[in-house]
Image (cartoon, rainbow, N blue to C red; front, side, top):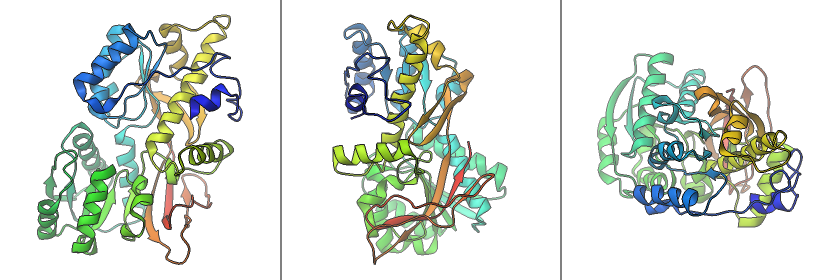
Length: 375
């Protein structure tokens, strides 16, 4: 959708120049769902067979960890669009690899800041996370943030279902037996939906406060099946938590018109900010190449430390020696409105200044008392 809009010069300023620097965007797509080995094989094919100029993706943390060193070895300019693992730029430095969105540490620190600043009372907590890089990193970050910001909290249970497990009866029983004051989870997508649908009827969330690292994307699908009072974020101030702006309003309408659903997922926003970041970097590099297509080295030099506007707000390549982005995060509580099938955010507060504004309309579910946390 973005490629079509950019090629048609129909994006708002500052993205109204056709394509990238007047050159049309051509997409070559590889399916990440094929698994780790196939993802690396597909990446190599993009570089060696298809001779692409830049690569955006993948989404999964395991895929990003596998692809990043390959991109560096092949000297291929690559923007990781989504993956949450903080290990990418903590484990090593790269010249050609970038990530145009916040990693999971930022999301978890924001969640703990919300728990602290909203005075959520709990002494012990339980956890349920998918057993792969994203889930393991998420829990480590959450516990580390707690130790620094709200010390003294005890872990009652750590549960590790497989990615895509779908059935959580045993985990729900274990959490009900332990009865922690708070349950933390980085479950997402279909796994999170299944967990909520199975746990809510059993009353799990009546005894324990559920706090979700990145979950607002499941609200349209769950509707009133998501209980009130659940605390959640969404991988930055994205999706249903994104602030209104001319660029975001355009993106929201364009996406909704194209796909007949709202862009509730952070993945849509992070793909958008990755593609727009590529456009800004390439056009910056083309100023010194006389309008010619820039090389991977020229793209990398232009991208390092770059800042640009995106539907989710300002993106700044401030970490990882200018290769890792930071962005605003938002956290809130769910509240179902049975009278009107739309909602709004109320009681909003912003670091260093105050802001209250309507949230997006989305099937009656709203996020209430949202806090936006500065980068």
